[in-house]
Length: 104
Length: 156
Ligand SMILES: [Zn+2]
Image (cartoon, rainbow over all chains, first blue to last red):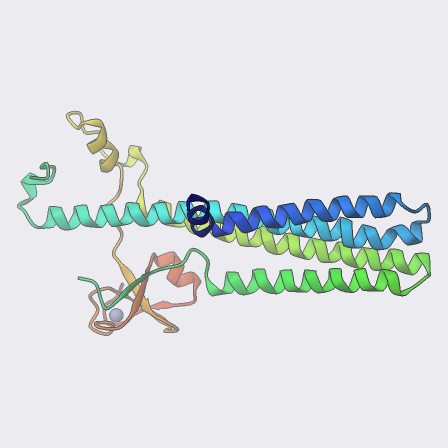
């Protein structure tokens, strides 16, 4: 299943979208709650749960998404370091003149 | 030669994880308290005060998230600086083909520095003190930021 593979490989990005979706939902619910009553005192609970709660969830979603980007970059640096090390051990074996030889 | 089983240094240190989770937990607690308290009182000005507490919680969460992302950015920047050297620092190689030139702009990798979990020292990977032990590799700045000091035997 391609979708399952995607979910497994991109767990943090799926979680990010989930948090963003929940955040938007909370904002919408909060908006309906606030617009449903003319009394400020009754609107405030919706401001907290829907508004602030929704923003909190949106923040979590953005955090997860940007963290996934950073983790990707970190893995790329892992690969680069591995490449450099394998090149250095290649270069250490033969005499120094053949530093740029092609792999036979 | 690698010393023992090798684990790569994670991007975020345990301290970063602790800071992020504690600030977000505090924020969540403040938000829940604000949500509960705004319904528990009929006094408008009291409700407004509790909303302000919720805003404080949101700011705490935002600060935690920003610090977390900055820590990740900084770790990546430090590691990239140790791995890659700007092209101007390397003599231009006229006969080099483009791929070789690209590789020539990469520095020789820094000495592999390792540490044993929860140890206070970091070592060269061929240090006799860490042979056969499970070690985590990382760049110098990461070890130093985790509070580790250079080993007195291998003098990394
Ligand atoms: Zn040592």
